[in-house]
Amino acid sequence: MTSTNHFWQTHLTLPSKPRGFHLITTNIHNALMAMPNIEIGLIHIFLQHTSASLTISENTCSEVAQDLEAHFNKAVLEDPELYQHTLEGADDMPAHIKNAILGGNLSIPLSNNQLQLGRWQGIFLCEHRNHAPSRQLILTVMGSSPD
Image (cartoon, rainbow, N blue to C red; front, side, top):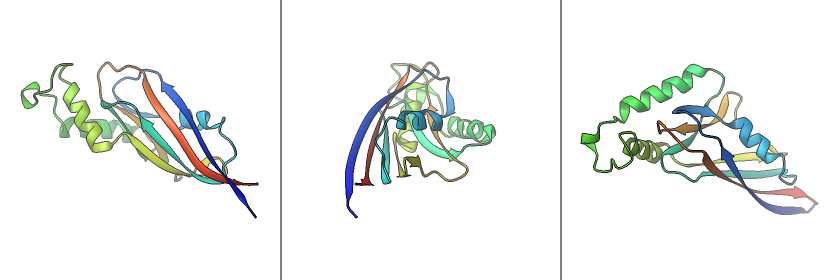
């Protein structure tokens, strides 16, 4: 049996969201509806911003997202006296620090065009700014399918 390798890419714009952790698994899934058939592969999700992040966490209980937001707000203080980079406000440098901790990209296995997340896992956009713009993602799929 032979297989064909596929590379597919699309851009996804997420509307502006308030500060916090927002479940975006459905947005990613919907964007993948246009990709070619992938029997086995990998999706790379890249966030084109430095004041927001991506993470995978528990997806069924809203308290988890609230607790994550509370933890990061206590761990990374919004005190302009702590930072040199304050040009865009008190939440600017803390947002960059949170991005550096959490990261701006994810890689997730795919099987038969489906994200292979665990039962309780979801993909989150972690918005670290008080007044954020829309956010841009690049979704890149690498995989193979039988001929």
